[in-house]
Image (cartoon, rainbow, N blue to C red):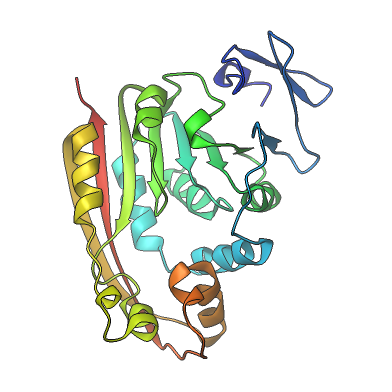
Length: 266
């Protein structure tokens, strides 16, 4: 963090910040934030209750590291290519997607994750020490403008005005959204014979296109075998599983996701 202190902007007054040897990040107007002993910083100005538990992020980490999303991660790494030096993962959770994508890039890169959930960031700092992890609100993020070549937004809410502020010239936003077949086996169990059994991302895609130019779209669909011990983990990590009041037996699960890549409109 000290090496990258020029990255930070005070979420209270927007002034630059200094990372001290005493474990404090302090701005020019003396607003101070502590680096936790686990290695992350909480930049939240006011508490924000989270519906996500420590257990949920443990389940998410097990699912992601099982390889279920590896084709998506490989596609994202290919889209990032060799030009990007700084990546921000927004809504990073416990950081497993960012960790895997950076490992696929196979080079030194500044990798930063932000999430509003303290439990998620605590887990990220525990699992992956070589990145910068911040608890923070995307509507008031603790970073200087034009700080990142790539902004990742994987199955998470977006803040396009903030993305535009944070992107470097020629930077890209890579957003991952569900397609109609995503987790369809689970959707069928949760919403059988109701309108929620079917899903469309059309509105999300159109909103993305309103904010970015030359949008590229890549749909990735596959079905993978799901080991029995991972079924309850999947149910816990996705809101679809929260609607189920019964035990579920899944042998296979379908991943059907669309990757949107956009550059800032001139």
